[in-house]
Image (cartoon, rainbow over all chains, first blue to last red; front, side, top):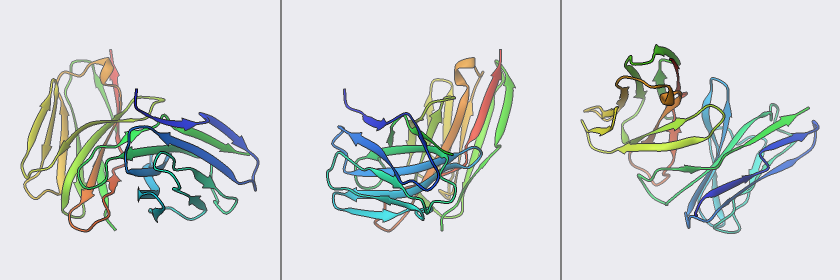
Length: 113
Length: 113
């Protein structure tokens, strides 16, 4: 079955460490997205990519970095520069262009202590 | 930038009562999508509305897109405990080539059996 996989489900890191969250999809989708979800804040866009080797900043990109070397993969690095990294991170994918629904992964809950 | 406001933030109903959540955009949208996130889960695509004044139904759920394509609503008739979750609207800006969704903060629906 096609889908989008995020790993790990839970992640704990010490403050000051960079951490990379994995996102892989086998839906043959061109576009991929990273969202952050905090209680009462909805989903806020971190980065998105509409094609391999290209990506754009979203609304809250500071302290994060991404790469899109393969169509199937869109890893997100949470750097030590991110002031409040503890959150639920959701990866999504869709067909490229206007008007396509997103398929979300099951998310990674990151806790930084 | 584009803003999508959603109200109410929370709604608690008795099973069998109706429920409505409203979504308003600061800009004209090319389309609006609705997602449902069960507690502890990830958002799941429900539907997309594209045309001005469009109304779509999915069993007990009715979705509307405003004439000006800046507002939308989701109405659930005779709620059931399986309807529990957070309902998000997400709007895509009309025009431009960056096809990305801006999500509202969601409405958390709880249903008392």
